Image (spheres, helix red, strand yellow):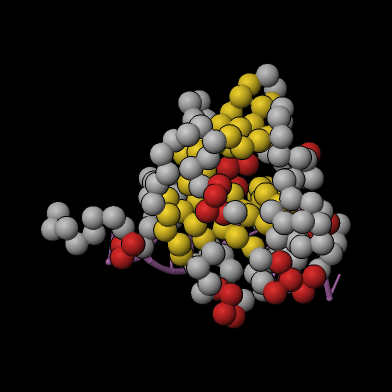
Length: 179
DNA sequence: ACCGCGATGCCCT
DNA sequence: GGGCATCGCGGTA
């Protein structure tokens, strides 16, 4: 699902304006087995409840005292998996969205959208037919201390200047070309 | 370039 | 009460 989402357009309609950006960086969180996931060990709390519901809804949580993070719930009810939106290539008039906290700031997303269906008019994903870019995979960001899970290649990106952190040199297209 | 750290509040034990 | 799926700033190179 994370791979599928890359390159598609995330649209937010709010306050009479339409804000959008193209998905360039996402991470997969694989539920109870995944020690980096909020739903690790099947933890079902007020915060994680939305992830236990059906796919196609927004899971929005608050972190570090000031940031909201947007996820897409990706599996059937009872399978608490999600894809975290980490960076967008911003559309016209949209500010920098390189990092999960910046994505939600730029698209005016907060707890009011937690549990919302990913459908018009508030928040939805479009495929505008843009050509698909090559996908690169890396470890996830900010998941130290999760044992083998911190090394799993569950961050999916396309080569873009809008990533929250640049592609490792070894993965960069044209690396070693001589210039 | 990299590193350290403060802000700031909710969640979970 | 500790920690956090972060960010931006200011310091040192």
